[in-house]
Length: 435
Image 1: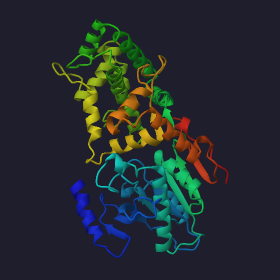
Image 2: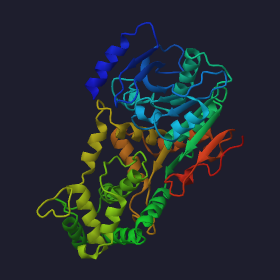
Image 3: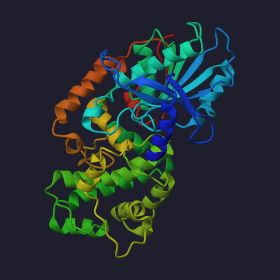
Image 4: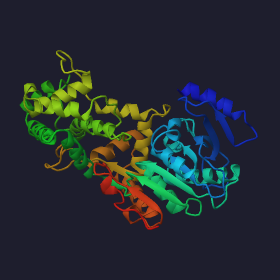
């Protein structure tokens, strides 16, 4: 993928006299187009630039002086051209005769502003710069298509991109007329216990007893960790090659979090959410909840271990196999500064601006009480350096809320869409803004 991008970039750079370029689409729907962006919008002395990917659909554009312009904002994932060819966004465009665009977020997908992911380069990955990218894009398209103030821009986004949509309307109201913000976590927060409460609700919609079985297993694990014999039982049931060290808070938290990750990721996948768990999931909610309720696999803890085997080994029958979920191995994958993987990029944003870490610190919590904020802060420090400590996280979260208002966001013409099973609903606006 990296090689293909470099070849494409060489082709793009040949357009020496233009800030625009176009190459064949990567999924056969529309052409990938490219716009020259500034790396740092807030340093007038900086001349560094990069190419941002975007897509266009002019099918329903009436080219009148009042035709609207719809912009679909990319979030923490690679954008696909088909997003401007199908779906609700396109239905709205067809109805209103809109010109459609989609832009990819800096550092995600093929929109790579720097050569690598060192911390010194990741400093350009900040909401302020992403919003300035949007504003610059709007101005460039206004000039290219000879649009006027009567051609009003409406931005759309879901999840983190939904937050960007609302913040773009707030920050650049002279350019953006309205925003449609779906499932958007607008309130940054260090640790988010509500995430698992919402996971619990989604799981119960599949099987009412599913969360109860998970919770029972989680509490059993906590009790077993108190004795050497209990640790041996966990080693055997969860097919570990080596025993856990119950005196290591990090090792214990990582073990418990890795089990929770199976269920969190399955729910994210079912809801078509970009994963915060950095795990690929190929098993459905119904599948794992059915397993949690199947007494032929034993008690709740045995079934919990069976789900772990399903995700770890690909099947339930794993006699003689063992595998350790090793924190150091997990960390090493994020430390690779040359590989543009989404996990490192999104984690950096969370460690510096958003938090959103799904803590579980109460005996009443779905996954028990052993996944605390300290574990996630330690993860940030192990990957990005000692300076990414609790104070930096707290200060970054406070800055985000100060700059963009959190749940006190004051702006007009923002449509906020929040679903009953929205994992982020506690951090989003429960009502739309005034017209």
